[in-house]
Image (tube, one colour):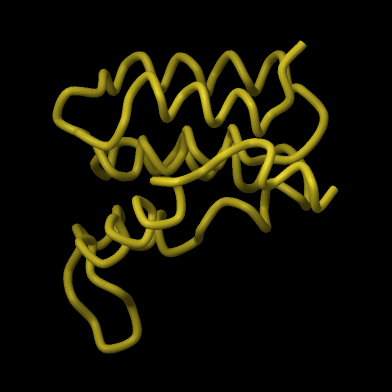
Length: 124
């Protein structure tokens, strides 16, 4: 069985970061499946899925991201970025206290572009 970090790495290899080509419905389905069949360990896989949904999503996706953030456990609450939810709710409107949608997406890509499961796992 793959770890959550390995599943995250495989997802990145499959989808990359061309958010216009990633199926929103497929990401939503993977999140729902993960909620029902949650795999113990880190929340990297779920965080990546929610990040993908944020990057390709709209306000209609807030409910599902909030479901992951607030209904699983404290670790999920810490791993899912609140600014993703706020940015979707406010339509990405710039604010002096909130990063722009483009900044958030760039940060997400920067974090995951070179993600390797073994790099993360050596710190566990």
